[in-house]
Length: 248
Image (cartoon, rainbow, N blue to C red; front, side):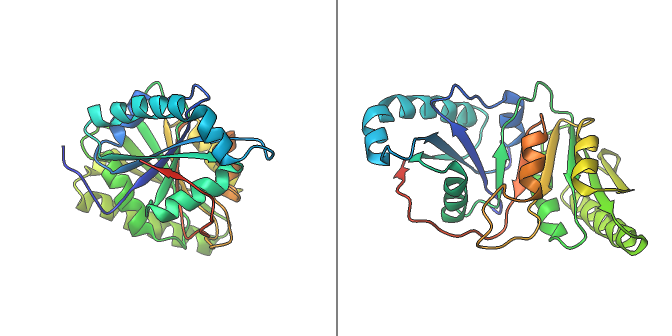
């Protein structure tokens, strides 16, 4: 299976919370390098060192089991293990440290046949489309590029952005009959969530990237929390924190 190195996805998983990653999602990410972040959120009164001393052996065993699942699918995977007081800050920091351009919320996915990609008119459409192309490679997944417009001029910009995205997908070998484009009017969050009910995987970008804006703290967070499907959030720049981590 071909491998692309211009994208990397952070996959956080609560290793002591019996969380699992759907096989369908693992297979879809097989051509993209993955950073598997095993984390365990701890109370404020517990230090990361205390938690590591008490739980590291079990946490590493759980993380290793999930790493093997990605390797068996042919994925290039590295791992990190963190005991943290704030999982969102940790996701942000590790994504920055490991140069991950997106983060996956691995919700249940019994089947993975269709993908919804929410595109704003002012995002780097080419980058998002190239990431989507890397996921679609070697799969039969159909994709809908989706834009929510608030005005007629916004609709025209959205149509242009979606055509750019479709052209990038085609340039990367994705057949045109697998690519659909849709522009609708409405409130972005509600419209995206409604459309997502007819798809198996959702790709969204953060609203206004800022080094002070923590991951999931904007529209992408609300979508991710309300969606029952796996969600890939394409990130921007994040503030590096000084929270300790254990590398593997």
